[in-house]
Each structure stands twice: as structure tokens, then as C-alpha cells.
Image (tube, rainbow, N blue to C red):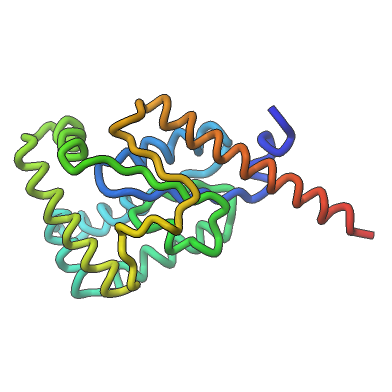
Length: 201
């Protein structure tokens, strides 16, 4: 392994992993954090914690967030604060857009709605029909919210460096594909660091 790969944290690497619920973003983000020795921050877990504090379901809290922008503003502030600290993988539905000027690598994972629903049903031990119903409501709510507050079209993936269809690739293959992209970016970062150090008197 090259020095650049070994010094991912020292170089202040920031990776943003985005995707809709059930796409595999948390699985990938955790794997990348472990592989490259980075911190892991889940914006989805923060959102769930806020919902729990208000004793609301994710569906109810998503609807509240459509009316109360302060919820997203709080999560955005946490995302940018953690990003500026560096040495981190941040997992969130729109983390790539929020961290567009901070993240060195912006990775999207995606899968068809029925595949995502089946994964959520298995994870949460519920029926596929129930998971699919909630998923469609959340997808629609979040799409409206992100367009209203940020002007973001979640179907426009031009902000990303890499997009991986997790219905096509296995978990292992997804991690390997993303890791290879991160390695290439790290080598570039390491080269830039050497140039900077070479200019110092």
C-alpha cells in the first residue's frame, strides 16, 4: 500500500456517500471508513435520533421536515462541521451536495425501488408491502423537501464522481469499486501534498 493510502486521515480525506434508503450507502460508508482508517458519520442516524426524541415515526418526521427547515439546517451544520474536520466518511441522502466544496470523493449508490424495499423489509423484519409503502412516501417527501429548500433534483447525479448500481454488484464488489476510486483520489491528494511541501522554504 502506498504512503498516500496509509495516510488517508493525515491527508484529511473526506468522502461523501449518498443514496436513497435501502441503497446500501451505510454499508458502503462503514466499509470505506474501516478500510481507510477514517471516522464515520451517519446523517440518517442523526435524523432518526431527532425523530425518536419527538416520538415520531420516520414518515411523520419527514413530513414535519417539509414544513420546518430548521431540521435540515441542523443536520447540514453537523455535516459541514464534520467535513471540515477531515478524516471522515459522511453517509447521507444529499451529503454530496451539502459537501460539494469539501468532499474529495462523492459516491452515489442506487438500486430499484423494489430491491430497496426488500432490503429494508429484511433488515427491519417487516412485510415488503409495508416497507414499499413507507419507502415511496419517504422518497416523495424527501424529493420535495430537497427541491424546495436547496433546488436539488435528486435524479441529477452530475455532482458525483462515482455511481454504483448495488442491484448489479454484490456487497464485496460495491466496496471494491468504491475503494479503487478512493485510492486513485488519494494518490492525487498525496501528489498535491508533495508539491505543496516542495514549495516550502
